[in-house]
Image (cartoon, rainbow, N blue to C red):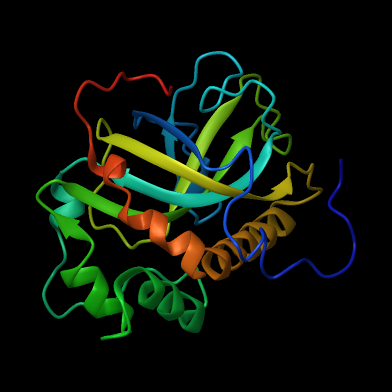
Length: 224
């Protein structure tokens, strides 16, 4: 299905908070994926394996783009923030990113650089906003269904083999078949801004504090 013409919604999901079947929760070990997100699109993704067609215990989840929060187990990636560096995350509009961080951490310092240095990192791991794709990626004609997560953060290190917990809070759009790589990139960047605005609302931002996002004990490698 090709993408529709016309403007897209800037926010998705009701202001009152996630509606059924959300929130969905799944977790898995971060693996090397197809390698195209970063190298070809400039939009890095973390991939977790899924068993069959079930996502978070639901077999009827539509392929498409979703948003929520991701918890990563402790690693060099979650701890490394070079002193004096500016935020390396530039895929979301600055004012949207600032509003999202304020919603997550309070109205103190709204500078993304400050939050990235001082708030995301924890000895127990770290929690980040994310946008994710569930599906077959028809532009690349994948033959297996995959979960590809784009974490809204500028990482200095890779985090393959880390464990990732996800809470999925809403649906952004269906999976489309794009005629060009450029149109795919443009839509993904729109997805990122839509996710940022949607997560900045109080009834969504509160899920970033969910304790289960940083609970990595007894978790399997395949998403469940």
